[in-house]
Length: 436
Image 1 (tube, one colour):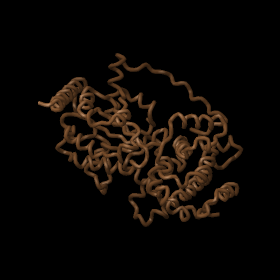
Image 2: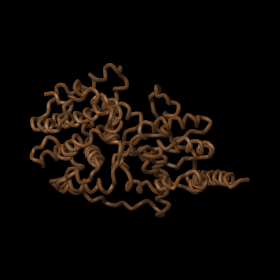
Image 3: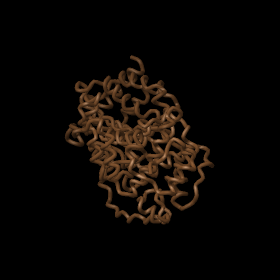
Image 4: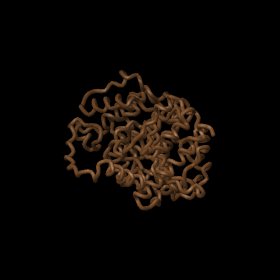
């Protein structure tokens, strides 16, 4: 028997042993019901309904977070694994042109639901450079000996460069250091398993720690505070300084940059720029020589607002778009936008005017209204509680695409303050004027 076959057999034995140990500890091997997609028109409904793959917003640096949950895999005889592979590629195809990260929740993989090693090999071989190039990190959560044995099986196939992207995470709390934890869709089974691991490690439940009250924001704070707070602390400035500065710079320097808003930037550099803004210091984007820094800062600013720019109130209205005829989307989106509070409406108009301009250069920058919607949708709207599921993301992206593609129609009755109009004229963008 070859070494590979030996390892496969060892992996199978190890998985069964882990499964038996877990059943003895919990008293049952039955997982809870996974989240499901109720959209039966989905081209991969047979797979999507299990909630195995989810897109959980962006991390702190604008990279899409894509989650694969093993505990949501049904028994193998109930799932066509070839369809699972096709669905995974279908999902990734929407995001692989931009930087993204993968989170793999290993808990819940069992002998009864695991894909074969042969299938895993075929899957890895099908993920060509298109998928691997912009994958910035792969987090393997709750790894076991089975994972370590599997890694040895695949080691000859995995490049050193790809191997450096893999991070093992033993406890969910460790994920907070790496990504936007609050946006993650974590199955209940995984949360319970993590709690058991922590109790086993400490010998008892964690002690209750009294959380100190949050520090009041600095008067100069720009990130993580409301639009109203920024306006009050910046002499009534209608457009937040972070937005006006990044958009002005990107209008002048970034419109012809291929993949604008799809790339990330150095994590420490983004932190440094945020710190400068929060301390009320000036930021000169020319110094960085990289338009993607300003692009990431703009997305980060939107994502860290306590309430999304489009407000929590309209979230349910946007989710209803899928139940409407597509011919009615523009008029309905116009109604939704016009219902926004005045300040949010002004800032939204300013931002969407710019994104419309970016889309007008899509032959050069490859950022069509649809591509921009995939990037910005989840940064403009999210629910008050929990995170955005893959199925809930579709209407959000539809709304964003409509706002960009049909900007002049949707915002026909919305005007900008005079000072913002003058700023537009200075940017030498002849093809885009905000309606007055």
